[in-house]
Image (cartoon, rainbow, N blue to C red; front, side):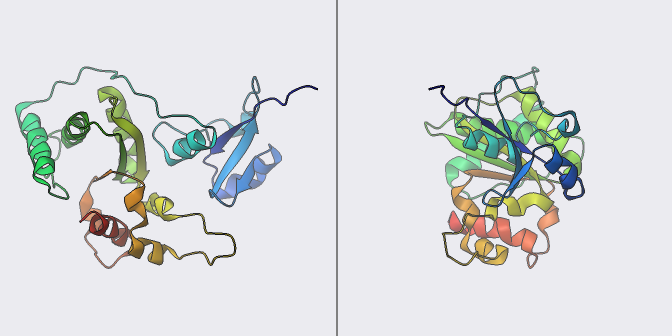
Length: 233
């Protein structure tokens, strides 16, 4: 009896307006993980109409795809040799000292163009390298700088202590609060999930780029990170 070929699930970021076309190409919707996927067999190529919707590196879709297929987060080698300037090195040390002192967070507020992205990521790398544990990192930023964060992490790389890196824009932050409801149980609202601090178990370090986007503390967007911080106290 012939053994069944292994099937890999490819998670696709399909716009809602394109889902009819994607469905005709074999894409299905998984209501539990709330994502579109295509079952792909070895040697099978992605249909032409689905090219460009594959999960990008460090995306939420890549994380879900890796978990479904039993993969692990690979160490990302540095693509470039980034030499930090004195003010960036000072920022890294301040971030690390805040962590060692036990502070729940750190605000890096250098002027525009001084390299806060590199300094922040270098600070994270130093924190995780000082530990014997595995770390999961979430970076939340405006949509317009997602690509910049992705390239910055690629340029500087990760290290052996990093188990996960996810980059999300603020509008998609609710993704990490969408939990699978128990069979027969009423699905929790996003407000209830935010109140319970559901994200606290998902990531160990959360970085908010342009955190002034959270200045309205009564907004749902702000309740997500605030609940996460409360859970870490």
